[in-house]
Length: 143
Length: 431
Ligand SMILES: Nc1ncnc2c1ncn2[C@@H]1O[C@H](COP(=O)(O)OP(=O)(O)O)[C@@H](O)[C@H]1O
Ligand code: SF4
Ligand SMILES: [Mg+2]
Image (cartoon, rainbow over all chains, first blue to last red; front, side, top):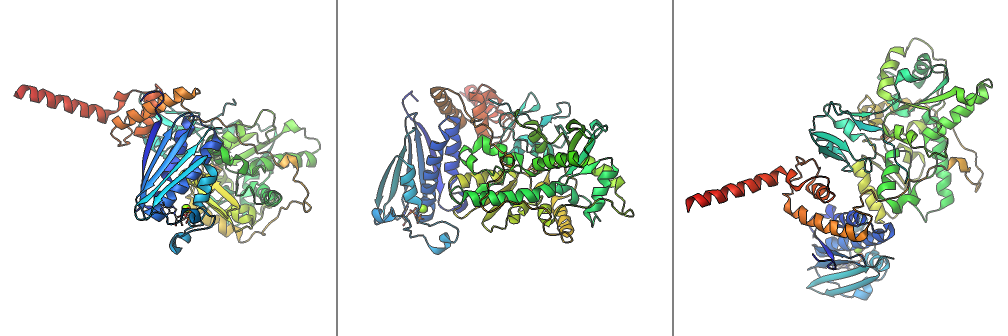
């Protein structure tokens, strides 16, 4: 890699293993600590990424998480080939959720995932096509 | 930077370099170098897991030795409540307390007594703070405090600042002795904590320079256990009586401290790996309704401390049957509604945060190192076999990049390279 090329980390988010959801964000957290990013920034990234990871597991049967790191910007790309989001504006509303009851009984599906991803990232792009899949890109800028 | 003083160390003569501790260390602080285990002081949290698992007893904790107690002083025993779960046929805690007196202590101040006060103060603290910062995390286990300081900087403001029972017990014990014996001078009074774990030794050692430490000696529970066994006498009526209630006695079992708060929204986790998982989840905001988090490094709580003698589950049952005949609480604080908690009670401060895992202080350099780690990691077999001296292939890649070991320390990779060479040689001969 050259100096200006971002570091790239890839994770498979396993849609069949509910209990492993959130593992990628924990690994990213450690890596960012090793590189000396500020704890508050790391927390924003890990919370937002965790929410995205969970969404891929509960709504889209898993997907890919890619993290690109430069000193100026951390980009998290979450890509799945799940059912897609019908109405993104609606999905972004606090409390909106289509999660089934069994997921809710586990404490997920409060409808705060996407709003939190927006709140904790500096930039959020959602690209979703029904029946094709969803790609979410979040950017985080060190203060 | 303040240097953390440890209590767990290696007896190199006994160490066989077997890799057991390497695999067991929950913070990956151990490496095998030149056939011996080495502990990285920046990552070690003094949990004692290596002591627990070393088959050669090569890991040790520096407790004060029984014979080193200065008998010319007024010695006060501070028995941890887990001690009461160590003995079969103990149906009344007073027999154990009398046994301590017969061992030569001048006074006793039960940790469980102080724990009841800590419970009250914690409840008051949570009330005054409201829910905005919840969940609040217990700071009674020193391993947890160190772990949060090292790895969870954003959770530091959730730590309950109330002094842990050991500190409050030491303080109150000394105050009481000086009051009851006006002839004693402060330097004549010495407190002796009877500890289930090395972590409490570290707690004492790391008292900030500007703070008074109220605990003078920390002796190991297993050491005292054998001495007490021969002293405890069921035929003699004890002259001392327990000053603790069932609430204080519930602390050493996981969940006891939390349930004592009478708040249903709590979580109790035990075992370092579980704790790390829970802290990760809390950091990600995963538990919405939680008010209090109790954490104990040891499996089952302090009854599972490395220096205990009895199986933690048995100890727990014994303590439960002792509790049945104890008053619910014997110690309460008297704070008026809204009255602030005295400053001298709120003493816990998280250690200074500096990422122990940081690759390099220079950002650009740590980036180069990270990319090198990724490259090397992909060259390794991914077996996490430990024969290179690092607990995982990832850790080995990091060590190589930090310049602490060599890629060639991976025997699996060496063997594969050798095989490839032999194959090539073979081909050469054929043609
Ligand atoms: N990756 C995804 N694929 C399909 N639908 C999604 C995805 N992520 C979010 N959604 C939809 O958006 C809704 C809101 O998401 P979120 O705010 O995270 O709430 P929750 O996950 O608690 O339901 C979800 O209930 C779901 O209908
Ligand atoms: S759980 Fe208890 S015995 Fe174990 S390290 Fe923490 S304080 Fe010590
Ligand atoms: Mg969600």
